Length: 217
Image (cartoon, rainbow, N blue to C red; front, side, top):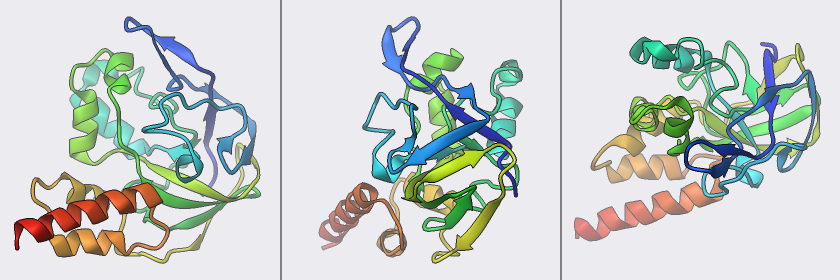
């Protein structure tokens, strides 16, 4: 596997709302990465992006193809980098990437921490009323990394899987459980036990599981 795309960007206004966003990314040949992600890359809405557990975002090529299958008018705009991600690697997708996976990208070591939670700005950027909801429902969200070792990444660098502590918890499965109207408590607890899961998401799942406990007496 090799790095096929690198992207970072500055804060820009999203039309017509006037809200600022970091979803607009430009292609880069080389980036420096620290514990908060690509140096110089901006994440505006910290509820959904940024921080140590959401330092880097990757989106998959199969997910772009799925979007274009349903939203054919987006064929030339739903392209790598457009969702606001930082990395493209052709061989990686929600079905093949697991929570807790540790990868080496160039000299950077990063761990998959959680699926992305898509926000309304995707709808606004692509001028669609329901694209955000479609991405969430389909489970084609992409995923986040925390950075374990800072370093440099260049286009063409090798991407290597170093560890896989949770082989049964890929991003697709994780999203399937979260999308269920009434997830089973044992399924939630299985996710909670995932090595490397983001702290805030683990807390959310624990609260959700506890709520099921109380409802079920």
